[in-house]
Amino acid sequence: MSETFKKAIHLLYAPTDFCNMGCHYCYLGKLTEAPADTGKVLATLDYALERLLGTGYLPFNLSFHGGEATTLPPRLLAALFERSARHYAAYGPHIAAMGFKPNPPHIKTNLLNLPKHYDTFVKYQVSISGSVDLPLSLHEQYRRDKHNRSTLARIKDNLRLLAAYPHHKKISCVVTREHLQRLDEFAADINYLHGELGLDMSRFNVMFGFDSPLNAAKFGGADTGTAMLSGAEQVLFYQSIKQAFSGTALEEAFRSEWFKEFTPDYCCSAVNCGNKFFLLQADGDVYSCPRGQSSPAYRYGNVFADDIETIIGNGWKTIERNENRMVLHGDCQRCEYLHYCNVGCTFVRGEAGLAKSYTCLLQQAIYRDNPERYRPLPAERVERHAKQLLLRNNIAQLTQPHPSRQAPMTPELFDPANRLAALIENDPLLRELYSDTLFFLRVDGVRHALRSGILKNEHHIEPFGPASEILLGVREDALGIGCQDEGVDNYLHLMLLRDTLVVYGDERRAKQEHLFDYSLYRNTLVASAKREDGYYVLDIAGILRAHATHYREGVANNLFFTTKALREYHYAKHRKNAFYHLQAINLPFQNIEFLWQEENSHE
Image (tube, rainbow, N blue to C red):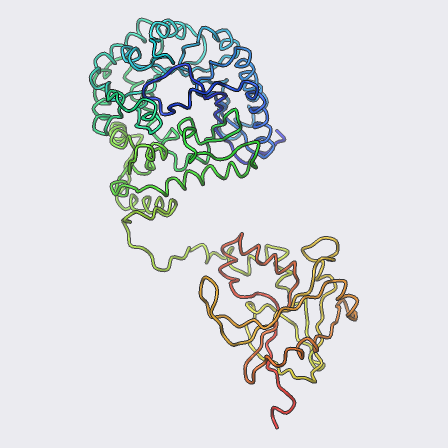
């Protein structure tokens, strides 16, 4: 395995937003009306994979979603499965090496077109996740086609076909308020599918519908049966199903699989789902997930228009930004299970206007039913986890469960590896920037080795005057450090500050007042200077005399020396390394302080 990948991601591809059904609780609303642009489908996936892999991001899971992907022409859908199979064949060892299991091609489908693509599914051993409504009477009521016609007869036939399918398959259903009136019927239909139809229901998944503005805009919110359940109603549903299947052959499936979406194994409980999950559309747009593709606020970018690094980086930033806009319920800060749910799905919280996970009470019931798997945190650790959550998400609206620290300082700053001396030692350019051999100053025959002002452990001030001979030595390689073309575009940079304080900048610090900057490009410096023992020696007395009217009696002046390239590197390091920024907040360049004494000042 020669390639090195820096990150594994879960890539969902929605080749079309179009759906051939009009489910009454669909959160995508009218987005499913637009027909597919089949001409872009393959090219977009190929281009996205090429760019992702080329930038070091390996899709460990490549799944097809929608809309409804089976509305694509059979040859086109087969070509997508072929791409997926080739991807797993080529990168399976890498996927395994990164700790993930290589998968067959996978599709999420409403099963309406299953017969049309059945042979293709078998050929590519496609893993099928079918979405139906249980009990089937609710499928008749809510999972209608585009013309509001029944799909139940076709779905019953297709469930029989799915039961005979020789490869991996499962079904899921969405639970809404109407289900509370049909609990016995729900359990009976599970037994019918498992026992009579032969469809293995140990792989069944329950999902809960949620209120969505796009759904309300499409259907008017008139059907109260499709409304989302309250937390207490979700627990009632869960407990009823638990009672119905306790002691049966499906009890273990109930415990381990049916409600798995509400456990830490799923994206809904991720600390930040934007770190791993990405949904690609045929137009190149990238969103958070099938839910998030309904909202511009969850768009990460476009593979044709944006850098892959930008899109990947926008993932966690977008989720965090949306999280930061919401209020977090005070209960979450004291919850002993916070470390499992991490406040739940950010998208659903935003859509439904909630301050906690929309399945909060249900999740707590699941955790309590499985104490060996989901151990509650002790109270002191709950507060610590809540504090980390608040600091990570910067939720300003929150009443925090702990006092605000007035002067927070990370203990990492005092780690020997993060001290300024270590930072300099481990960075070749910083070693040169701070070197005490880079410059010297000879004043009236006395040579002064120039050192960084923030590294000196002594302080003295030299007397300069109008008659002083002041020669600056610049090491011959100084203007080539940190730049190309032998430093032709580089220059020697002098800065003179006076010890009269002025207040400026966002931090409102009192700082020495700047008098002048002076820059001399490399070629001019070489042409103007003499060479002496590996240094260019330049007379700078005239530069200092030219500004003598600005020197004040008894007030020190502070003369700094560096180069353009090293000065730029210093500020770049400031931006990249917080430890450096904190310790090099004052000018770090080689310097000398002097008092200017006119010839008659002591007469």
